[in-house]
Amino acid sequence: MEIKSARFIISNTDSGKCPQHDKPEYAFIGRSNVGKSSLINMITGRKGLAMTSSTPGKTILINHFLINDDWYLVDLPGYGYAQRGQAQREQLKNMIESYVLYREQLTSLFVLIDSRLEPQKIDVEFINHLGEEGVPFALIFTKADKSSRSRLNNNVKRFLDNMSEDWEELPPYFVTSSIDRTGRDELLSYIEQTNKSIRV
Ligand code: GTP
Ligand code: MG
Image (cartoon, rainbow, N blue to C red):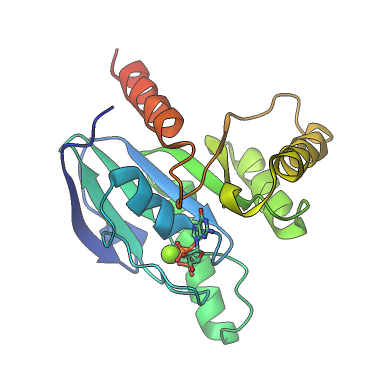
């Protein structure tokens, strides 16, 4: 799929105030600093579209971007960032939870996993929670440029093997790098196919 346009629409603290429309939405979630905002910029080919930072905890709002006037990408705050105060952590958790569980337009949630790490408890728990709630999701292993191919393949395999213990069927998954654009075509094809399949 070609990206003809990518526009920032609005930021919200409250999922109830997100834009009303009947277009599919694809949202990015994952631990702080895993590369959600960078991936939105890489996919759209618009460098400064979503705000990124080397310091975790950059994105603190629900951000809607309209792509090709046809579907939305949604950038969410990261989970698991311990440096915040208890009150703000709670507030962010509630905001993410209400978006993920109740947003009708959410077609697929992409859960981003740092491909450099062995399976992290917080990611596994979050994914299991999605399963219990029946939220459709796919996995994205990020920062592929940072590891050798063998370490990358090994980490992906370990994560999927670990998931197989709890899940009968594994979700679709992608390997990406926002630096060298690995995975861009695959991700855009998946979104294109999904858009088609829900519109027939
Ligand atoms: P929060 O908004 O804080 O939850 O973080 P985020 O998940 O949106 O991460 P963000 O995109 O801001 O990126 C965090 C850091 O990781 C930045 O310094 C990025 O430059 C870096 N980064 C993101 N993606 C990649 C990647 O694919 N490869 C490499 N090498 N660095 C990346
Ligand atoms: Mg971000």
